Length: 382
Image 1 (cartoon, one colour):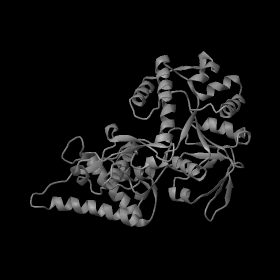
Image 2 (tube, rainbow, N blue to C red):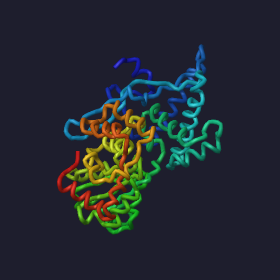
Image 3 (cartoon, rainbow, N blue to C red):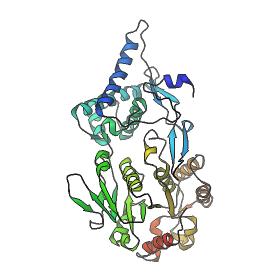
Image 4 (cartoon, rainbow, N blue to C red):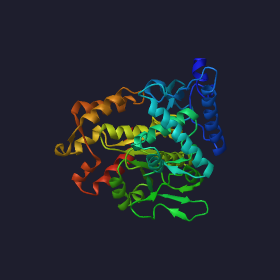
């Protein structure tokens, strides 16, 4: 690694892998203060200059796949290559200002000892600086810029994950100072996963399950919950209702660490997005690569897969849309996919079709549980 790359960052660590640290509020505030002092030092020097902001690059060419030495878990990581936000580049000036504004907001949140969701952050910034923040996406990207600058996790910045996740099945949760929650005795919507990672880290978990099943869709999750599938096959069902948020991945990782003998399975649509969601649970993502590698799990692909298409009528198959083909090509060019996953993806593109989990209802509403149970008993997962 080139020394100048390491020196170009405010808070570097002399190691090949680059990560965001979990820090107490006082240390995060100190890092923000150092960033401000460095900026002012350059601005008041004999040759004054507005210094660029050195961020760890969140691009494909700065990423890699790390294989566990003592486990089967592999994860995406980011290395030390740096990109910058500059006030002097016309197409970058607003992004430069956004970073400082989000840092200032995080500093205030930390001083007050509070947590805020990215959604709350968006509305506050929209009120304060509408000329800089017009969309949630801009806020989300800027938060990741601050993480890449200060090298601390989003939660350390006082930003709480907006969780959509839910869990149900053979698990009992003990919340500190709260009631005990039996996840097999709650409603079909499941136990809502909080976005506060500190609360999730303090949960005491008990379970006699043998499997954890990640469900892509909330409707499928609720169907299996209503059927009490977890009593047919001793399992825990978990969903993030689409692409996984950090809180859902955090809890999944905690369960897998607490019960290392549980097999983690994923039930996704047979399409590029379904495989992309599975890969996020399995490896993490480049976008949040400084911290999401921590929550990578050894996930196996249960279904839907190409072998299942023989039980799905042709008339319920749907054409792949252009954006899905783009997702497929992006996945195929990545370092993530093992050979059998590549083969599945190639077949999707070759056939130009996709199949949704709901297509199994052609055989009756009770067929879904039978399908999953049979595949688990036969260990039909990859």
